[in-house]
Image (cartoon, rainbow, N blue to C red):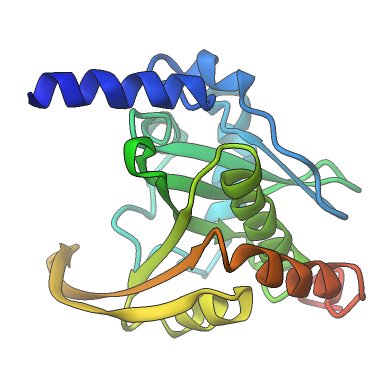
Length: 226
Protein backbone atom coordinates (compact mmCIF):
# COMPACT_ATOMS: atom_id res chain seq x y z
CA UNK A 1 0.00 0.00 0.00
CA UNK A 2 2.80 2.42 0.88
CA UNK A 3 4.52 1.72 -2.43
CA UNK A 4 1.27 2.28 -4.33
CA UNK A 5 0.75 5.62 -2.57
CA UNK A 6 4.31 6.62 -3.42
CA UNK A 7 3.76 5.78 -7.09
CA UNK A 8 0.50 7.73 -7.14
CA UNK A 9 2.21 10.75 -5.58
CA UNK A 10 5.07 10.57 -8.07
CA UNK A 11 2.54 10.52 -10.91
CA UNK A 12 0.78 13.62 -9.60
CA UNK A 13 4.08 15.40 -9.01
CA UNK A 14 5.12 14.74 -12.60
CA UNK A 15 1.79 15.95 -13.95
CA UNK A 16 2.09 19.33 -12.21
CA UNK A 17 5.67 19.85 -13.30
CA UNK A 18 7.44 18.94 -10.08
CA UNK A 19 9.07 15.68 -11.06
CA UNK A 20 11.04 13.74 -8.51
CA UNK A 21 13.92 12.84 -10.78
CA UNK A 22 17.16 14.56 -11.65
CA UNK A 23 17.56 18.31 -11.35
CA UNK A 24 17.50 19.04 -15.13
CA UNK A 25 13.89 17.87 -15.29
CA UNK A 26 13.00 20.81 -13.08
CA UNK A 27 13.89 23.16 -15.90
CA UNK A 28 10.38 22.55 -17.23
CA UNK A 29 9.02 24.42 -14.21
CA UNK A 30 8.49 28.03 -15.20
CA UNK A 31 7.10 30.83 -13.07
CA UNK A 32 5.69 34.19 -14.06
CA UNK A 33 7.79 37.26 -13.31
CA UNK A 34 6.61 39.87 -10.86
CA UNK A 35 7.32 43.57 -11.28
CA UNK A 36 10.98 43.48 -10.28
CA UNK A 37 11.73 39.86 -9.39
CA UNK A 38 11.75 36.56 -11.25
CA UNK A 39 12.14 32.98 -10.02
CA UNK A 40 13.58 29.93 -11.71
CA UNK A 41 14.73 26.52 -10.47
CA UNK A 42 18.12 26.47 -8.80
CA UNK A 43 21.02 25.52 -11.08
CA UNK A 44 23.72 24.40 -8.63
CA UNK A 45 26.75 24.69 -10.91
CA UNK A 46 25.65 27.98 -12.46
CA UNK A 47 24.39 29.66 -9.29
CA UNK A 48 26.85 28.47 -6.65
CA UNK A 49 29.40 31.29 -6.69
CA UNK A 50 26.99 34.22 -6.77
CA UNK A 51 24.54 32.73 -4.28
CA UNK A 52 27.34 31.71 -1.91
CA UNK A 53 28.54 35.32 -1.84
CA UNK A 54 24.98 36.58 -1.41
CA UNK A 55 24.35 34.20 1.47
CA UNK A 56 27.61 34.80 3.34
CA UNK A 57 28.18 38.55 3.59
CA UNK A 58 31.03 39.58 5.94
CA UNK A 59 29.95 39.79 9.57
CA UNK A 60 26.38 38.61 8.97
CA UNK A 61 24.92 35.17 9.75
CA UNK A 62 21.75 34.56 7.74
CA UNK A 63 21.52 30.95 8.91
CA UNK A 64 21.15 31.16 12.69
CA UNK A 65 17.57 29.84 12.81
CA UNK A 66 17.76 27.56 9.78
CA UNK A 67 18.36 23.79 9.83
CA UNK A 68 21.52 24.14 7.74
CA UNK A 69 24.28 26.66 7.15
CA UNK A 70 26.33 28.72 7.18
CA UNK A 71 28.56 26.87 4.72
CA UNK A 72 32.34 26.87 4.86
CA UNK A 73 32.98 26.98 1.10
CA UNK A 74 31.38 26.72 -2.33
CA UNK A 75 31.80 22.94 -2.41
CA UNK A 76 29.66 22.54 0.69
CA UNK A 77 27.24 25.18 -0.57
CA UNK A 78 26.86 23.39 -3.92
CA UNK A 79 25.82 20.26 -2.01
CA UNK A 80 23.16 22.34 -0.26
CA UNK A 81 21.88 23.70 -3.59
CA UNK A 82 21.76 20.20 -5.07
CA UNK A 83 19.81 18.95 -2.05
CA UNK A 84 17.09 21.50 -2.81
CA UNK A 85 16.08 19.47 -5.86
CA UNK A 86 14.78 16.36 -4.09
CA UNK A 87 11.49 14.46 -4.36
CA UNK A 88 9.67 16.82 -1.99
CA UNK A 89 11.74 19.96 -2.49
CA UNK A 90 12.20 22.51 -5.28
CA UNK A 91 14.65 25.35 -4.72
CA UNK A 92 14.08 28.56 -6.68
CA UNK A 93 16.70 31.22 -7.31
CA UNK A 94 15.48 34.78 -6.73
CA UNK A 95 16.73 37.13 -9.45
CA UNK A 96 16.57 40.92 -9.59
CA UNK A 97 15.19 41.55 -13.08
CA UNK A 98 16.77 44.98 -13.46
CA UNK A 99 20.33 43.92 -12.61
CA UNK A 100 20.33 40.17 -13.16
CA UNK A 101 21.66 39.66 -9.63
CA UNK A 102 20.94 36.36 -7.90
CA UNK A 103 19.94 37.63 -4.48
CA UNK A 104 18.52 34.65 -2.58
CA UNK A 105 16.47 31.48 -2.57
CA UNK A 106 12.89 30.46 -1.86
CA UNK A 107 11.94 26.80 -1.71
CA UNK A 108 8.90 24.61 -2.22
CA UNK A 109 8.92 22.10 0.64
CA UNK A 110 6.77 19.23 1.93
CA UNK A 111 5.22 18.78 -1.51
CA UNK A 112 2.11 16.62 -1.09
CA UNK A 113 0.28 16.64 -4.44
CA UNK A 114 -2.09 13.86 -3.44
CA UNK A 115 -3.45 16.22 -0.78
CA UNK A 116 -2.88 19.38 -2.88
CA UNK A 117 -0.74 20.81 -0.10
CA UNK A 118 2.65 22.53 -0.39
CA UNK A 119 4.91 24.66 1.79
CA UNK A 120 7.04 27.66 0.90
CA UNK A 121 10.08 28.21 3.07
CA UNK A 122 13.83 28.08 3.14
CA UNK A 123 13.65 31.75 2.20
CA UNK A 124 16.75 33.88 2.51
CA UNK A 125 17.89 37.06 0.85
CA UNK A 126 21.18 38.92 0.87
CA UNK A 127 21.10 41.86 3.35
CA UNK A 128 21.21 44.47 0.58
CA UNK A 129 17.67 43.52 -0.41
CA UNK A 130 16.16 42.72 2.98
CA UNK A 131 13.18 44.89 3.93
CA UNK A 132 12.61 45.66 0.25
CA UNK A 133 10.28 44.41 -2.46
CA UNK A 134 12.34 41.24 -3.05
CA UNK A 135 10.89 38.95 -0.39
CA UNK A 136 7.31 40.08 -1.01
CA UNK A 137 7.53 39.59 -4.78
CA UNK A 138 9.33 36.25 -4.47
CA UNK A 139 6.72 34.91 -2.05
CA UNK A 140 3.90 36.29 -4.19
CA UNK A 141 5.24 34.46 -7.24
CA UNK A 142 5.70 31.17 -5.39
CA UNK A 143 2.25 31.29 -3.81
CA UNK A 144 0.56 32.35 -7.04
CA UNK A 145 2.23 29.54 -8.97
CA UNK A 146 1.22 26.98 -6.36
CA UNK A 147 -2.44 27.97 -6.47
CA UNK A 148 -2.99 29.07 -10.06
CA UNK A 149 -0.68 26.81 -12.05
CA UNK A 150 -0.04 23.75 -9.91
CA UNK A 151 -3.55 23.45 -8.50
CA UNK A 152 -2.77 23.28 -4.79
CA UNK A 153 -5.46 24.15 -2.27
CA UNK A 154 -3.24 24.92 0.73
CA UNK A 155 0.10 26.75 0.96
CA UNK A 156 1.91 26.47 4.28
CA UNK A 157 4.50 28.62 6.04
CA UNK A 158 6.41 27.27 9.07
CA UNK A 159 9.10 28.82 11.20
CA UNK A 160 10.84 28.71 14.56
CA UNK A 161 8.73 30.54 17.14
CA UNK A 162 11.86 32.55 17.98
CA UNK A 163 12.04 33.83 14.40
CA UNK A 164 10.07 37.04 14.83
CA UNK A 165 10.99 38.31 11.36
CA UNK A 166 9.57 35.20 9.71
CA UNK A 167 6.37 35.33 11.76
CA UNK A 168 5.90 38.99 10.88
CA UNK A 169 6.54 38.23 7.20
CA UNK A 170 3.89 35.50 7.24
CA UNK A 171 1.35 37.94 8.66
CA UNK A 172 2.23 40.64 6.10
CA UNK A 173 1.86 38.15 3.27
CA UNK A 174 -1.65 37.22 4.38
CA UNK A 175 -1.01 33.85 6.03
CA UNK A 176 -3.29 32.79 8.88
CA UNK A 177 -1.60 31.69 12.11
CA UNK A 178 -2.78 28.20 13.04
CA UNK A 179 -0.84 27.40 16.20
CA UNK A 180 2.43 26.04 17.55
CA UNK A 181 3.85 22.53 17.36
CA UNK A 182 5.74 22.31 20.66
CA UNK A 183 9.10 20.51 20.72
CA UNK A 184 8.63 19.93 17.01
CA UNK A 185 12.28 19.75 15.97
CA UNK A 186 15.85 19.85 17.23
CA UNK A 187 17.70 22.47 15.19
CA UNK A 188 21.49 22.47 15.56
CA UNK A 189 21.15 20.88 18.99
CA UNK A 190 18.53 23.36 20.21
CA UNK A 191 14.81 22.74 20.69
CA UNK A 192 12.53 24.29 18.09
CA UNK A 193 8.86 25.00 18.62
CA UNK A 194 7.34 25.54 15.18
CA UNK A 195 4.71 28.15 14.31
CA UNK A 196 2.30 27.06 11.57
CA UNK A 197 0.63 29.40 9.08
CA UNK A 198 -1.39 28.80 5.91
CA UNK A 199 -3.29 30.34 3.02
CA UNK A 200 -6.04 28.28 1.39
CA UNK A 201 -7.27 28.45 -2.17
CA UNK A 202 -10.54 30.12 -1.19
CA UNK A 203 -8.59 32.84 0.64
CA UNK A 204 -6.12 33.40 -2.17
CA UNK A 205 -8.11 35.89 -4.33
CA UNK A 206 -8.36 38.41 -1.47
CA UNK A 207 -4.76 37.83 -0.37
CA UNK A 208 -3.56 38.16 -3.97
CA UNK A 209 -5.37 41.48 -4.43
CA UNK A 210 -3.70 42.96 -1.35
CA UNK A 211 -0.26 41.72 -2.37
CA UNK A 212 -0.60 43.11 -5.88
CA UNK A 213 -1.65 46.48 -4.49
CA UNK A 214 1.53 46.55 -2.42
CA UNK A 215 3.76 45.33 -5.25
CA UNK A 216 2.53 47.95 -7.70
CA UNK A 217 2.30 50.90 -5.29
CA UNK A 218 6.02 51.50 -4.68
CA UNK A 219 5.74 50.97 -0.92
CA UNK A 220 9.23 49.47 -0.77
CA UNK A 221 12.68 51.01 -1.35
CA UNK A 222 14.84 49.51 -4.08
CA UNK A 223 17.39 48.33 -1.51
CA UNK A 224 17.78 48.31 2.26
CA UNK A 225 20.14 51.26 2.02
CA UNK A 226 17.59 53.40 0.20
